[in-house]
Amino acid sequence: CYDRNKNPQECNPEFENIAHKKRVVVTETCGVDGRDPFCKLVEENGVVSRVCDVCERTGRRSHPARYLTDINDIGNLTYWQSKTFQPGEDSDREVELTISFGKEYELSYLYMEFASPRPAAMVIYKSMNHGKTWVPYQHYAKNCRRRFNMAFRTEVNRTNEQEVLCSENFSEVYPYSRGIIVFNPRDGRPSDEDFDNSYILQEWVTATDVKIVLSGLNDIPPVATRASTTALSYYAINDISIGGICKCNGHAERCLMKKGKMVCDCKHKTTGPNCDMCKAFHMDRPPQRATKTDANECIACNCNMHAKRCRFNHDLFEKSGRISGGVCVKCRHNTDGRYCHFCKAGYYRNNKTKSISDKRTCKRNVTSARKATSRPAPSWPHAPVPCPRRCSSARGVRVSLGKFCRMGYAVVVQVTGKLTLRRKTRFTLQLHKTYKRGVVRFRKKERVDVEVRDRIVHCLCPKLQVKKTYLLIGKYNRSGGEPRLAIDKGTIVMEWKNKYKRRLRSLQRRARRRKC
Image 1 (cartoon, one colour):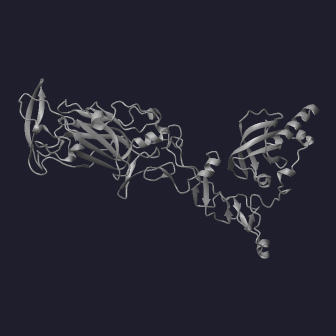
Image 2 (image 1 turned 90 degrees about the vertical axis):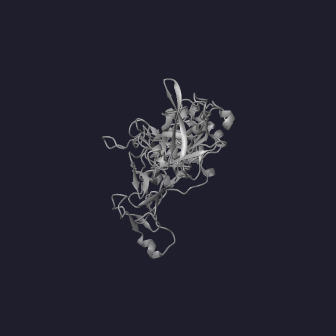
Image 3 (image 1 turned 60 degrees about the vertical axis):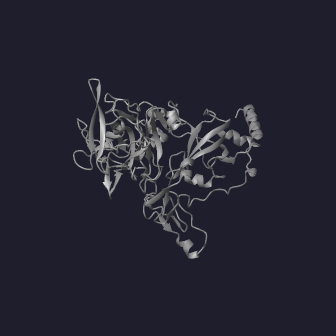
């Protein structure tokens, strides 16, 4: 699950025959209730003959269900067989075979080889909850319309990717033995080439159990002996194999038994039977399936060493531009906040402490405690710097021509993302309208990331909120090379109103005349 440089990468358990030596539960087996005579058709040199025998409960002439998933033998000497249908008995009597995997697997194929003629009708079902409920997976019939009222050829597209189909390809009576039925759940599905990114197809191939229902005997044509075909009326299967991998969502290279249950040996900070959850302190983003291009390792929450637990908040994750959604739980050392990044009420930042992760980063406000005031002490990172002015209503903000000329830009933006970093906050702004651009050329709808120091964020009037639109008038940050959009203590921030358009256009015209 890690490359040579110890970087995480997609990994999966080995491909296997899931059915091998698994217990198969069947509704009937020949010989269980007494000796069961039967005949089989053998073809040699184009001549079909009848060979008769008897099925018994035990011994060499028994055909129990365990032979369905044993090791393939060269002569197909071991096979399971149903009871022989008696004269006058309904040939549509259903016989069920159920295989339980004990865990979720992603299936690649189901292969069956018969020791009798193949059935005229058969249905494969799957369960994703260990047999509590079943859903159809694939139908087989000589005539799909007549048998199941289904079309033989149904076009599958991305809107019906989990459509259950019916096939007429494997329901002929010939060959009389060693005929096969093969089902590939991904065959013909549009997302097969993009499987890692298709949740619908991933769910389609997932199963904990498979049930095969044999629901119609094929009509045996008259053979050379012209004898009754009654003794030929039964089902017999040499082998069932089901190929696939233990479902671990790309985060484990093996599955193992723990406390009597099969589970993935999860890596990439994931956990759960299928590696579909993040570990307790690694919930900064939701658990995702690993792909060939991205291992999607679970990321630890940023709690500055002041918390041992965190939780995931989907709304915060979306507002951050799908970057961070972790929220620290039970901050210690007198800290508080989403990242345990400021001091709780009654404490202030210890300036002698070099790191915010230090246990002594917050000191008790002794003066405040002595006065027993209900007003909390200023908390880091905003304290103890006071804001130079109080927030006033937008009606009181007046932009003069001189101020407009002194500023580097005047733009209308919408805040689309907000991410709290160490000592600063990153805002993602989408530009809607430019009234003054200065030395930087903006494109309409362009997205710009602006990092603002926490002391500035604390004093902004009004506070920048995600999904709201603002008028920003300020100066560029020219440090470090190219000038870029900046928000500092001199920036004018106003919640946008359409009535500002007239005033801003007037300032534009007057500024051009004066060439400011």
